[in-house]
Length: 110
Image 1 (cartoon, rainbow, N blue to C red):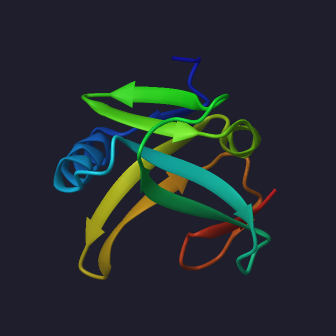
Image 2: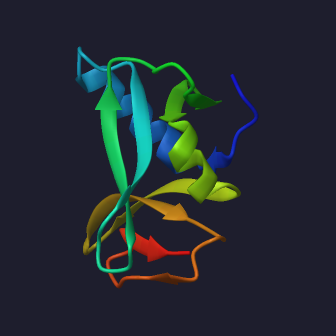
């Protein structure tokens, strides 16, 4: 395990554990940053079979999150959270490096 570039909220850890248990092919939850979205970059969240070489691994309460080295640079100091509201449930990233984000919260700029 590496020094975490992000932290995982209790709610996010609980939801990740539930998702991994429900998918027999998944072992970890992956967070990535990709080019695109209305603000320049967007987050991608997915279940994965395992970590890749060079991945940063962050653990909390039985949940393991993998972040590739390039994406880690964009989310340093961030918190992965899970929000369940009337308008829907989703993973979010509270990113102090983002200078702007879109209304839906899935894309950002630095």
